[in-house]
Image (cartoon, rainbow, N blue to C red):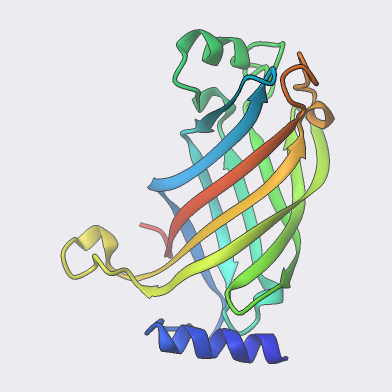
Length: 198
C-alpha cells in the first residue's frame, strides 16, 4: 500500500533503522507520560498524570496494521499537583483504587493515517467499565536512541511516539461533578520504548 511506502521513505530520510520483522518494545518508565486535561467549572483547564505506566508494544514498520499495544496504569499513582485532590481521586468517588488497582488499554485495530501517523483503537477499562477509544499517534523515532553512544541505558533500538484522544469520564464510573467540571477529558501520551526492555 502506498502509505507503507511513504512511511518507509520518511523513515529512511530521517536515518531511522527499520526492523525486518515485528519486535517487542517496553515503555521507558522515566520517559513515558500519560496526562489528562479537563475544564474546571468553566474557569480554567487543569491537568494531571499517572506516574506508573507499564506495557508492551509489538511493532513492525512494514506492517503497521498489525501493531499490538497493551498498557497497564496504576490509578493510585495519580498526580495533579494537589495532594488533597489526589487523595479524593483515589477514593470511591472516583477511581476507587483499593477495589480497582489497574486501568488497562488493549488495542483492537490500527489504521495508518499518514506517513508517520496512525489511529489506534482499543478497549479502555476503568473500574471494570470497558469502552472502545480512539487515539491518534505520531511516530517520532524508530531506530537507535540518539543518546545511546553516551549512556548504556539508551543503547539498542527505540521508538518514540506522541498520542492524543478524548473520553467521557462518566462512561467509566468517574463522572462526579460532570458536566460542571467537564465530562469530556483529553488524554495526551508521550512515550519512549526500547526493544526487548531491560
